[in-house]
Length: 331
Image (cartoon, rainbow, N blue to C red; front, side, top):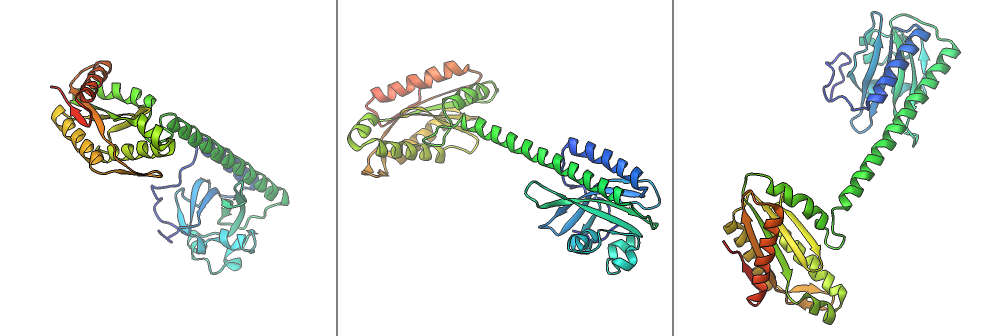
């Protein structure tokens, strides 16, 4: 943070849309030609950081208001104007003698209009300044207010666009999530498995079924069954890495795509998961439930996704045929 009004422009200048920049530069040029002021500029206010920053500026005379300039909000003329001081003066030194920033910049004429967002909060200001006394007509100030409203409208459009993009992104994310467990769904699995198989690194696929899950649903109810599904999903995630794809394909079927993982490592992960679940009952609304898993593991390098999935399913079937509560990972 800096209070030096001639500080080097901060490279972390507030981001704004290309449309806002284009509009602002055109309006600042128009404002400068109408008023004859040496500098016209658009600022933003960081209320939490107590800073005012110049976003875009037009300078044509000896006075130079640099883009990126940051001044402590408490020392700005804009703050004084917003708090009831004159919004236009041709004698800054007399009107605002306590402003160090104004003195160091050499301001004589100063005028400001707030730019308000849709909620009424002040985003920043449209300002004009000059090192000479320049009288501004009422019409010029009216034009300035109209330009500030145009900037505010652009800001509202930008905000609406960002909200729409965020909403679309959220909907896209939801399309790849299982509503019950919060894991990826079949669509996420179908997207991620081919991507993982396309690389040159080893990949392993772990296929998981909950043993006798229909019996749990039939005897204890679907609420308890849902809790079992969520718990198994959480434990599967806990035994995988952050970058692995863990998905529920439907019913009691789960999968984990383990990238850059050989068969032996994947089999060890599967065994730890199986032992974790069988060794610790899952708490449900119907009471603790003993749960076991059948797990099939397949691994390879450069194998087509469909082929890897087929082999993982075959390994899972073998684990079930062997009596369940088992891991099968054929070489």
